[in-house]
Image (cartoon, rainbow, N blue to C red; front, top):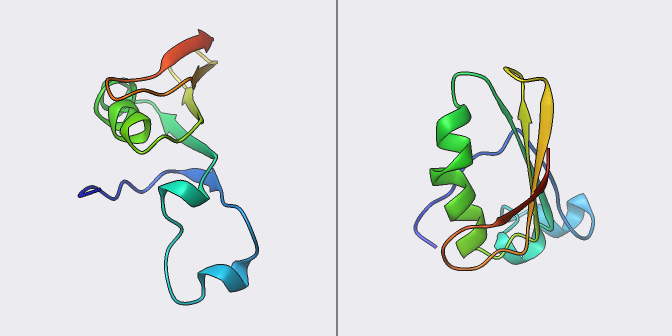
Length: 85
């Protein structure tokens, strides 16, 4: 609740008109993407925990170093479970 990460991409429910007076909140965002090279460790740890605590259901890390996409789902208060890369 106290953190507002700025993801590289996300999907928000509704239309752009719904957010004319506010940014989408955690409940509005079912899918978040971070593109990572130098930020890979932070995206896999700190940001993953932030999105999990906010109950964002799907979190992708586009891992440029290994040329993979890491998919995390099933958030809980500690983190998210990695589904595949």
